[in-house]
Length: 61
Length: 150
Image (cartoon, rainbow over all chains, first blue to last red; front, side, top):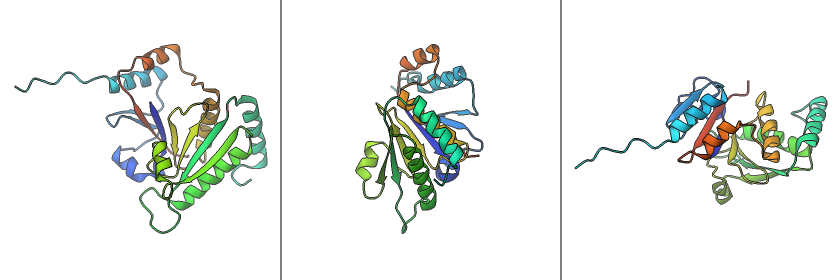
């Protein structure tokens, strides 16, 4: 696992890319986000959901 | 001392002396100095960042500051997975994968201080339930935590 702490004001390109309008905001693997300082269990729940494998793709043939 | 006043420096020094266990390296990457400026590369902010890190390193024998350049040492930056600056890898007995992008000023100085101490101790303060969930994660995760210094 990697964790980057990013000063939003100094990296406006990243803040824009990840739609950061309020801090703290945590983006997990590009796809999921947690806004605000949430309880540990809620954060872990969001993290767990974000990294769980997606449902198997539909057969294309 | 410039960033911390004498009283704050004394407080930080005492806290570091009491709480640090393993040595910690602050591996700092500066952006290009002068000339071409890319988005996110503010040389002044980088210099403030370097000064803050230097002050912290001067407050404990267990902390060292390593200074690198993104421009002349891209291979070192790549080793740390760093692609923009100013950036600081905080590394203890292991590299736990934590990077700080930007200047840890204002309230974020406390974030840096807590981070240095946690990494020095190899602790994280998480509950056993959280640790169990993390150990069972099916894939790697990259967290980007956006903050502001105020």
